[in-house]
Image: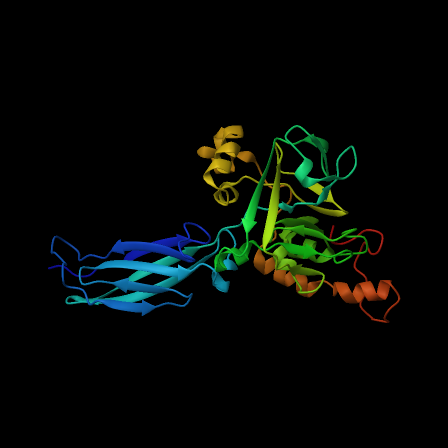
Length: 332
C-alpha cells in the first residue's frame, strides 16, 4: 500500500528570475511502487509572497513567487522564508514545502565616488588592477581586480532591490561623509559606537547601509540607471571615500552569486580556490552586523539628526553625546 509522501523545493532571491518571478517545480509521489498517475487533486494554491503553487492530476507541481516582494527582498544571506502547501490525493493529503533563500547583492560603489589613494582621492571608475588604494588597516594596497556593472533599474519590478542608497553629507556624523555618496544597498559601512561593543563584543563592525536607512540622510534613490563599481584586494579591506569608511568587495560564495557568469569567471580565475572552497578568501575585515543586531543598535544609538542640530546650535536637545563626538565620529 502506498501513501503520499512530502515533497520540497527551493528558490533564491534574485536568482533565475523569469518575468519577475522565482520558480521551482517537482513531482510529489506515493511511497513504494504504487503509481500515482491521475490520483492527485488539481489545484492552484495562493501563498504569502505574491506566490502560488499549481499541481496537476499526476502530482506535477510548479511554484512561483514575486521576486520583488518586500519580505523576499529584505532577506539577507543565510536567512530564509518557508511556505508549506497542503495537497490532496485519493490516498490522503501531503505537503510541499518551499524554502526561499536570501542572498546579498554584491557591495559596490556608484560611479563618481571618490576613493582615497596615495595620490589623493580618485573616482572609483578610474581605478584599475595594480593601482594603489589607502586601506584602514594595511596602508597602501594594490587592487587585484576591478569590475563594473550597468543596471537598468526600470527593467522590471525585481530591479528595485538594486536601487542605490544615498548617504548625505554629515548624515552619519559631522564630516561623515564630507559629501554625498551613493553605494549599493548591501554595501557595508564601518561602524564604531559604544552600543556596538555592548551588542557584539567588537569595537567596530560592518553594517549593510540598507539597515541604516531613515528616509532622510540615508535614503534609497529612485533613478533610471546606475553604474556600480567593485574593488577587490588580495584580502578584504576597509577603504575610505569622502570621509566614510566602508568595505571592499568580499568574494564569498554569496557575493559571487550576485555576478553574471563572465564576471564570476574573471574573479575565479584570480582566486581559483574559491571554486571548491568559497571560504578560502579569508575573513571579513570586521565582524558583520546581523539584522537583529542592527535593529537593536539603532534603538540604542542617539538620533543622529537631533544630535547634529545640537552640535550646530539649532536645538537644546538633552540627548547625551556618545563617546567620540564630535572629534571621533561614531559612524565612519
